[in-house]
Length: 157
Image (cartoon, rainbow, N blue to C red; front, side, top):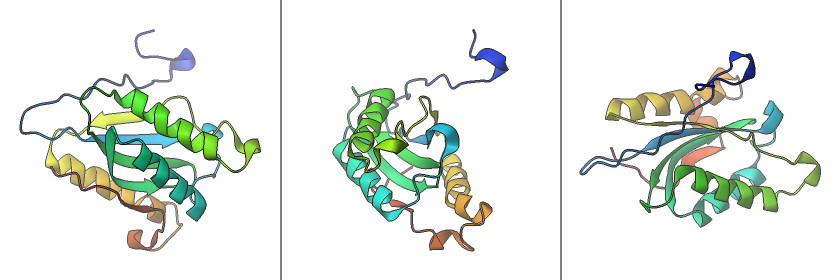
């Protein structure tokens, strides 16, 4: 179908990150809740996601923003043999198994959006976009006031 779903809707191709000597391999990832339900932006879910990402140590999570119905995060491979899709499935399953309300399941959309950053400016612009999502959604007046965001690991460009 050449990258097209029924009805002409595009879906991501998920190419493997390009690993180059002396260059970081940082991926910007967006994962949505199935049906765009507002399940995520709570302290308990924030803690659950942090535990899942800590457990899923084949990739490192850098900066992240947890919105009510989706998550933006930067990640980088800690293990060059571990594929991004496998890592995502691992932590999504961890979160789903520990999810407190069985009636919310399934939690995640099947697919996700990912893009490997090519330059340091991309990192800055993607982070500005992600961290200002709560402001654009009128959830807070300033990005720094949003409680469901942070940085687990420093991913240097």
